[in-house]
Image 1: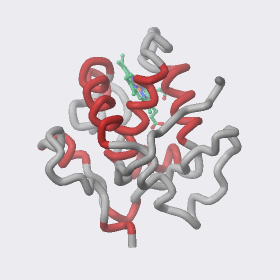
Image 2: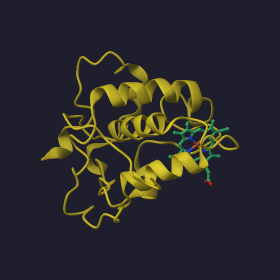
Image 3: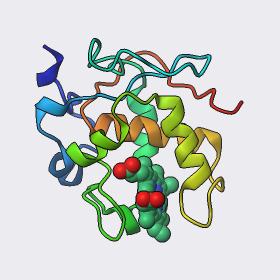
Image 4: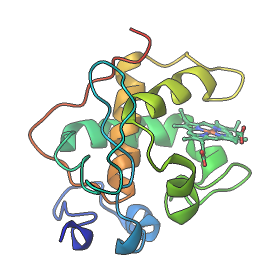
Length: 152
Ligand code: HEC
């Protein structure tokens, strides 16, 4: 029943109109798999649709939001709705990433984003961006701190 819990962070200061506008239909909630620390590909997307719930903190998502505003929104849109670049929330985004791990998403961001300036952010910032993207696609923050071991 995790499908109804997207954007479940009421009271968080950044949960403004932008994020709400980016909220996806519950049906597609969090199909991205939490990466194992070994980087082993997740194989449980369908079985554990909420695998990413609780896998990152609200602080991480907030930091990611901040980095996103500075580094990403000019192309991907302030509400992740997509401008010249693809949307980063909703069905289209989830279809791109279904079954992939947070490590893979992290590695993609670090290696590809922003275009022409890939890797210019700190690993911490990229991890925070992953947290923000997870949250924006329906995952619920929790007590655990997301880490990325991709390429470490
Ligand atoms: C200069 C414009 C630009 C900026 C700035 C930018 N991106 Fe992108 N981004 C793109 C383009 C264009 C693509 C599509 C690339 C492709 O299809 O090969 C993309 C693709 C992506 C994807 C994959 C989308 C999918 O559907 O799989 C993610 C995730 C992403 N960007 C995240 C980010 C993040 C996070 C930042 C900030 C650190 C960022 N981007 C900054 C232009 C940009």
